[in-house]
Length: 329
Image (cartoon, rainbow, N blue to C red; front, side, top):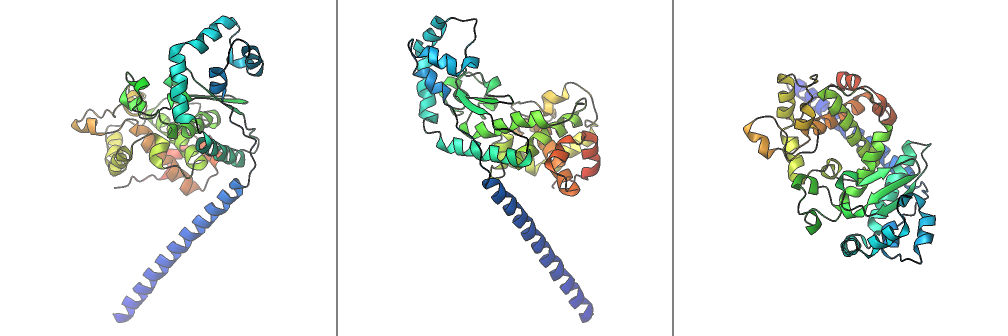
């Protein structure tokens, strides 16, 4: 009996030591990758068009238009732009942007590290011109990216409690903070590289947005999860503590493969809370379908040991079938 106990004890110690060794190996590999990424030289110089426009006048406007022709519609003559520069509301907006984003170094450093990661994982990627603008607080177009340009509207990142946002819903204002600039950039690029042509079921939507969040995992490894998904710490904690219950609700109500077009509004799209049609709805954060999709994609990536590109290209069905996802209890 004593001999049996010793064997079990040794096996237990061996298992623990093996697990610790694997964790250290994993951390070592991640550290090696991050060191390689940190050594990448990125040609980035954030262009503060918002400031250039704010300080322009009738004499300097032609030069500004020549440097940034894509920022000036040919439908309008110069008087329109001069009137806008002189508009008191626009000037107030410029002042508020300068208060929050006057010293842009920390954000620019974060943008630089983000592009280092893209270049590492996508060798063909060419760093665009990053240009800051104001856009009349159009929170639906906070970031716009093309192959050669990335526009960032700084007036949509003044902080959730800013007076300019008094008539915007709280769940939208939550992510109008400057810590969302780089995650929003990442999301815009994720949409360009994810291959998932079919998005008919709730599961399709969950996996699609799970991929965008996994993309952020890889591009922004030092960013907390609540900022990646745009939750408060309390909202992320609620989602994590209730992960098994959320999954059980989806499964028992046969929602995963449903094509009901009301489901994205209940569980995917930005909203003040998710809509289970239960008393607890008001306690929940919105977009819990995205949160569960994120965990499924993470489970698949870990099990399949797949590259980022492979994860982004794999169909929702294959990810779901091979993830062997088990929610945390």
